[in-house]
Image (cartoon, helix red, strand yellow):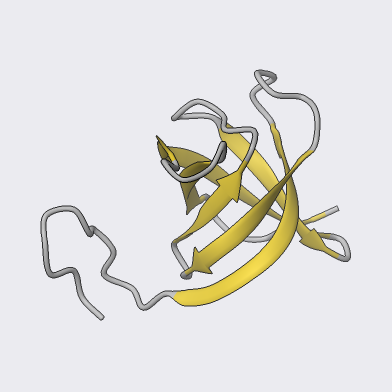
Length: 99
């Protein structure tokens, strides 16, 4: 599905996941691991729902399970009006990193 309005910038089809993951900053601004839910994901990025948002521009590792980590950069962050959570948009950097 291609973008059809000025707010929606995605050009890749999204896959809804609702998958629980851990994430942590690699910039040092948020050294602890926290939980997030990946709401939807494409090859280029994802939408995360979390109680612990980090600043736009922060690079994070997303631990998806097993030994797989995704390197990403936070490109948007908004508060969810119906909860105490925030929605963060992330752009994947390069490729999966395994540790």
